[in-house]
Image (cartoon, rainbow, N blue to C red; front, side, top):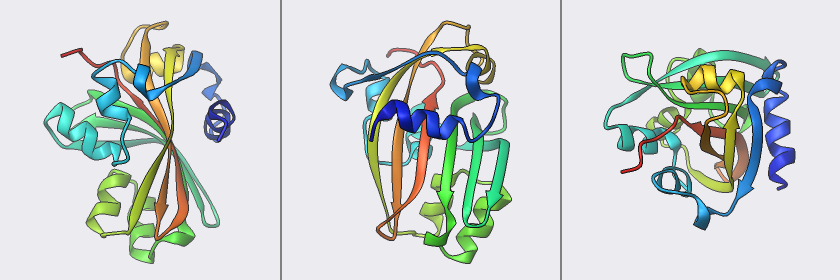
Length: 180
């Protein structure tokens, strides 16, 4: 995977996303600063990583979505449970033919974070980390993650395999974290 091509492929799903980043650079996992390295450089669901780091459950807020046959895409925020405090911004492209109808219905209902749905339904899954990105916030990302334009945060590109099929492409961007 070319990280910049994949980043462009996901962000172009929703027109107007051109103002997300002032700069996006692929960096090696080994050079990712903590706590971002722990948060991003793994093969687990970001839902769980966010809940563990922030010590609370997270809610999903779908900012935009579209369904075209079996391809479903959404632009989301994960928020600290019961608040408007963002912990993650992202894009998801899901090939729904690889999951059951019950899983499909819950995903399209847009009420539960994707990772939680897959865990709750015990979907056989594997997550491949594609790339770690150092991102300089443009106006849209800054607004969504409540950070200054020009501030730096980190994200990842990943693919979730469901039942051994490449079902989900992800861009997951962490809200700025306090270095512990």
